[in-house]
Amino acid sequence: MGFFSRLLRAREQARSGPEAQWDQEDNASELVLDAEYADHLAMEMEIDAGLALHERWRARLEDMAMGRSQEVMRPELVCLDHRCRLGRWLHGAGHARLGHHTAFGMLVARHKYFHQQAALVVSLFQDGDLAQSHKVLNGSCRHASNQVVLLLKELKNSAVR
Image (cartoon, rainbow, N blue to C red):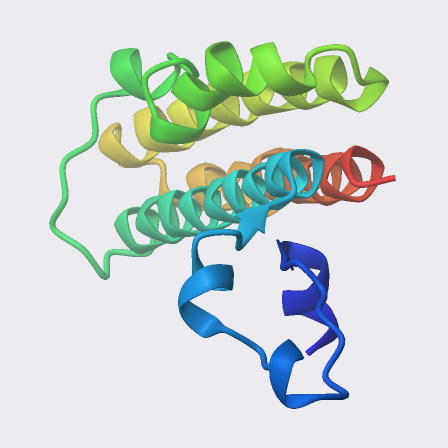
């Protein structure tokens, strides 16, 4: 109930007498979303969506590199960090809402580096150098991906403070 009491602010009425009955029709139109809280909630949801998108993209890359998928990725497109859904958010609405946070600049840089490493994984895989592809995937690419996740979580925490 604490969540909804913060989320929705209803007009309080005394409940002590028949003349002060809770009138649902009267108050239903007065349930409003606190603007500041709604903004924080929306921001948290956007960041959570970004985390999920990144995790799914990383899983697709791993499936391709490990031969569990027949997906053909193009390294010249994979390296473009602004083409994935998280990248579009980072360069658009995310920048507008969170660009002032210190972690945001680091996140954009780490996300770009992740895509560069992912493109290298794809290139090596397509050239048949599976050992080196797996080495990059499990090394610099995984490290950059983990940093993207940590920075998204840091942004989420700092955005609601």
